[in-house]
Length: 230
Image 1: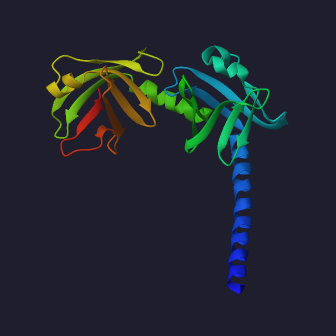
Image 2 (image 1 turned 60 degrees about the horizontal axis):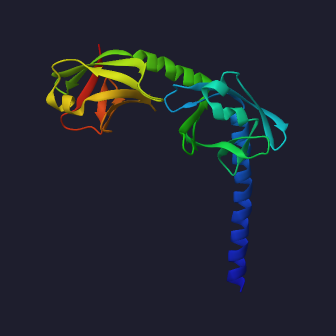
Image 3 (image 1 turned 60 degrees about the vertical axis):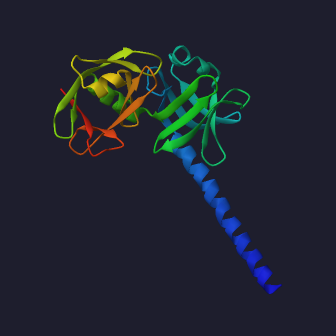
């Protein structure tokens, strides 16, 4: 009986310790969310600025949406407040407290939310988002694909012409290697630090920047494919 009592006391102590930690996590998240954020489609083809505040309002906290939000992202017309649900869900909600979209953090300062029938949306720090936009602008233009030994295999042009809601057009130049021609990318986007190339058939190639400011196809292979800015 004494052993059982000790076990019970240990469990109670653990529960008591976890409770404040969880509460502190939610409180910390509330503080971290105060500021300006960008709400956007995954590749920022449609964006809107959300100013999140700590002032209490009915069933949540105050926020402000820039006027262009309702045009860029029509569902935002229903958003009037925000709150933290559970430990880590950031909820943008309507006047009744119901969720318009819920976000969870997937990387430091980057949150993802899903709206059924529409797709994934991103909520991220405004300054970081604008920095990423600048990075994307730097991607636009002519590129060369080369093998690890430096042998050129294709030239291509990344454009800022929208192909669909989240992607942009890419064009191959003449005389590409057969493997590149067979892949035949028609769209691209910049996603979480990767250049994503997509074909009409749905095939995807991903490239990550390495320490030499080159973009290598991942996963890496013994005969790597590298994109170089021209």
